[in-house]
Image (cartoon, rainbow, N blue to C red):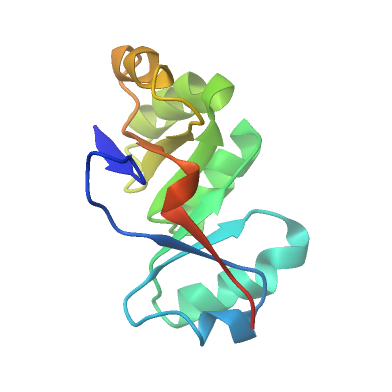
Length: 130
């Protein structure tokens, strides 16, 4: 299981960007974090064209499939969507890892039992403003 932002385990940060200009202020080789929406397609396109590593926060199974097709490295879901997202990722052999957003450590056990690729805690996400 992958851990991002857990207090016991050192991990990379995800840089939450809200526009293309914000990407330019992130450290080199950063993993960018964007919420999937039609209004963010320009940011996603920019990341793809520039071969940047990124995570997409999604809220539905349809968006999970889109995120994989858009070559996201990580697909971030809420815990209640994690099992379905993981099952689809395994069925279609996604390259992306499914990460469940958690607020409390006691959520880890259930997600591990479900076979979810990893978890992401709020402290792993750094907001970036241009």
